[in-house]
Length: 405
Image (cartoon, rainbow, N blue to C red; front, side, top):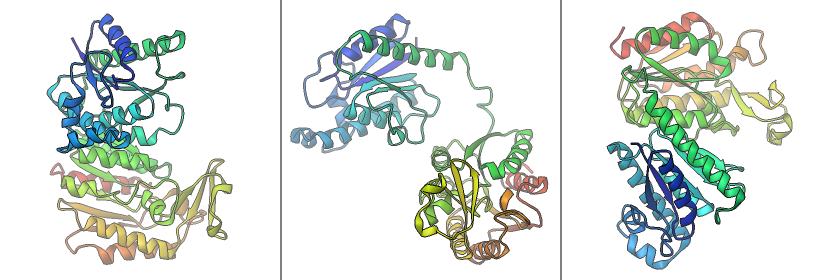
């Protein structure tokens, strides 16, 4: 029978977690109760004590608990929960996890859940679930369920919410056990895509899949780039098809879709083959026109839709982007190739389109070529990025680097 971790602060929310555990048992599964409440005595008996969790959070755990500082304790228990849950997942001891919490409980539980592999069911019932949850979910597949009322007893509302939550996590576990992956034995490639590079990535994906690979596509929207970097860092990925590096334009210039300064770093640490292109480095992303900072007045803008305003990168910005890309790629120990579509790096940078700017493109290409190590190949094609010939070159170059050409 599958085992589901029921993780929570049993010093303040013991009966609520006991209720969920009973519902899990009623579905024929085994609840494993993990106490992460460290500021008082537990009101229900756990299978894993708070002291066991705290001891996994750091060598000085006794000192931290003795100080009874809530912020320090929450951080400690979050680290301990991550270590314990991760170990349990690797050894197959748990097949899912559920938690109920307010601010502190949500912080602790989601810290632990973020350490778990994608696909393993993770359900957080939280008083914070109806607001901004990005810092709790991160780049994982945590399911956040609004608690509606506070997690403070079993009443006519909470009973329905908690029962639904227990049923949901049981259903996730049952579904996962009944549907093993049909592609688990195929090597994995990750790819970055934007609306302006969809045709290129779609064609390259087709070629790679015909060659026997599974291709996961990530939207280059900030969180998508971070998720891709996280998966690369997990050790599950064989190769990287980084066609859309646009998030670096937002990081450099101040757009809203930045993936952070570590974008492109995971491939170096993973030591796996990659192809990289300057896809959509012609654009910086903002929201509605009214959200564009005043300092950008007079720049070249394109209204992608009512909610998205794009701004063309300048030659100076493109030169700096080229320098950054070269610096990142120079750290790659495995084979990497930089491919340049000389006629357009996005749909709207082609001749006659709003972002056509040969000087900016030239600055970008020159900076990359000037900064790259001499042993990193640069392939230039006189086509637009969504041309089938460019997509084919990307896919075939990666296959060659993987030893499959």
